[in-house]
Image (cartoon, rainbow, N blue to C red):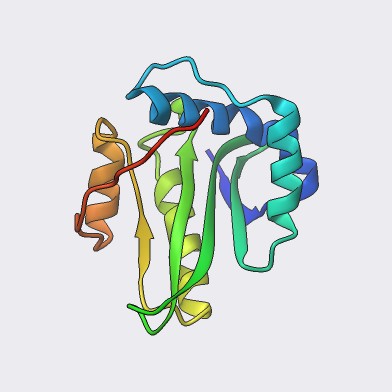
Length: 153
């Protein structure tokens, strides 16, 4: 396995979609669910987000295969009195898990947040994503709150 991390581009849209579906499905219904965003809506949003200067997306590639993807947004906050980064997505394909791919994607996100002089970096994670929680905790993330949401879909 030879994993490389690079900034996502428009040509990655179709190959990132299955990973986004994998993440969305587990996130919406608590694991193993059937939610799948429509490709048309996903592609439109993907293109819009890639053009947003406040967001950055990284792709992990193994040869021709996409192994994982991570996206983060740089936000401003009164509490932070400046910028903070929010990791919006981080997903590794099932066959690539537990091989350091998530760590490489997380490293890219942390480095980018540092370059942007963020005061902190935040993320949310599904309750059942125990392996992901271990990765985050190993990297200094602390569980600091509870997420509340209303799903309008």
